[in-house]
Image 1: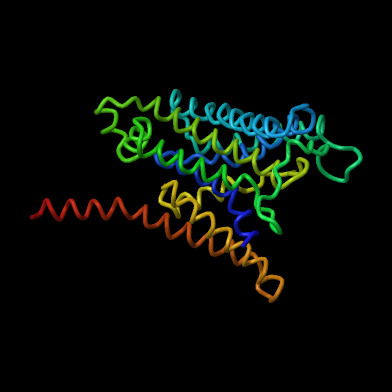
Image 2: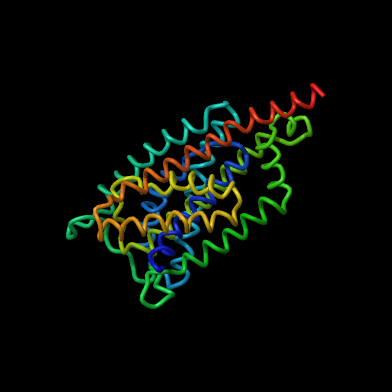
Amino acid sequence: MGNIIEAAIPLIFSGLAMSVVFQASLFNMGAEGIFFFSAAVISFIAIWAPLPHGIHQTTIIVAGALVGAIIMSIIGILKAKFGASELVSSLMMNNVLLGVGSYLMTKYLRDPMASQGSYPYAKTALFSSIVPGTRIHLGLIIALIVTGLVYVFIYRTKWGYEIRMVGQNKSFAEYSGINVVKVIMISHIVSGLISGMGGAVESIAMHKRFEWSMLPGFGFDGALIAMLANNNPLGVIFSSLFVAYLRTGADIVARLSDVPTELVTILQSLVILLISAERFLHSYKQRWIERGIGNE
């Protein structure tokens, strides 16, 4: 159970980040690169900043969130001002962030005394376990708090209402006086804040140094989790636990039998396929209903 919960923590952040942009009907995959790059950037603070315990960790999380917001705002500007596809822009940005992060690692962070990874993080920067006998850390509480804040933002604020209206019908939202450009920017910035925070939390909670040599995959997982949760922030928690359960179970089954862990990837692909098919066919179903009413 500890393995399931600790594996679900970064998935919650990723799922929340994806659910915000999905609510605005924007298919942005930039969280993948932001997870990696924010972890690389906060490593400078985690290694060399002489700060006391608590303040050090808070500074790291805030820095990661700001890095994510800045990067995601670039994608938002390209979409809002120039009409560039957010999917293409975010996927290209992921490669850019991977290259820049790898450069920072090679040039400044790599520990020559270690076989792999950066210099070790300061002890004041690391999260400790909050449940004895497991690696469940303070990031779980932070993830739950962020989930509540995102829920309130989406369903209890004017900005959240505008995001949902643009996602449901962009033309109607424009006709109603909603500033679509502002909505696109806000949804991207909020998504970047969450994904950058997730990268920072995962880095200082589950690692003692920056060890990623490639994109961690959390951003792509976030798309699946957001789809499973129907973009509802509260549903993201249960979707994350479900995916973490599948992966933890796959590792156990692989050790105890001849069933490969790749079976989980097949299951996840089928889930994405079925959910995508349902949404794709929804528009056709709506048209059939309208035609039936019109004929009557």
